[in-house]
Image 1 (spheres, rainbow, N blue to C red):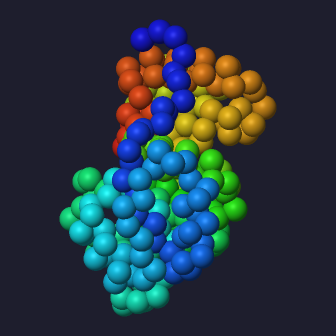
Image 2 (cartoon, rainbow, N blue to C red):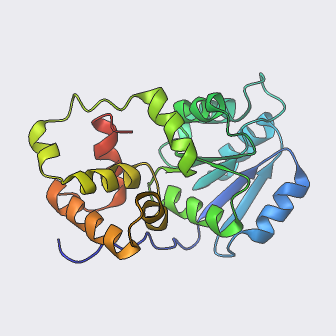
Image 3 (cartoon, rainbow, N blue to C red):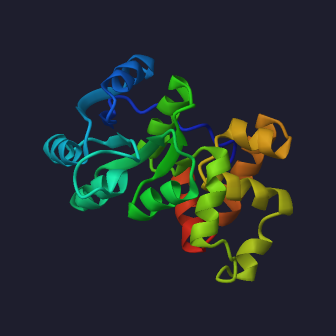
Length: 225
């Protein structure tokens, strides 16, 4: 494989369900999201969310963590109650909370990402596209909670796999696998976006992978996430 790896393209026609107990927030969010996203359902409680998700089977559920109804489990309960759909529906948590217990709870339940409500409509749209495409997406400062909860020990990684990557490539690989955008990686490591692209291309080539999704899966299997 040659050349640089592009940012994930916008996926047209993503079918989205928005779950939040504040109707005014749902309305404002819909207005801020890219019009290419198709909002096919809304819900304001655990029970309504489970019902709507089962009925419309969306591609992505944008899910608040704290919701009324059900057995009091909030977003975690919505995900576990929709377990049969996990093969086709992906969950992205969107919350005002940045508490470690909230982040870890929904990720353990099966969410593919977690971003805070301080994100812009563009950033949320980008996160939805990434999750729909198979990536894991986290607001950068929340990734540490996930790493702490699931462990980051590289003990199970064969030395020859690690030896293929330079120290900088390993840093870039970890961030990309955690769901950082190229821009976020560049900011975190104080390098240019083009340099990030070059490193990602080299990482994918050396590990014989073809996409960010495969890279995330590779890293997760080796307990790097």
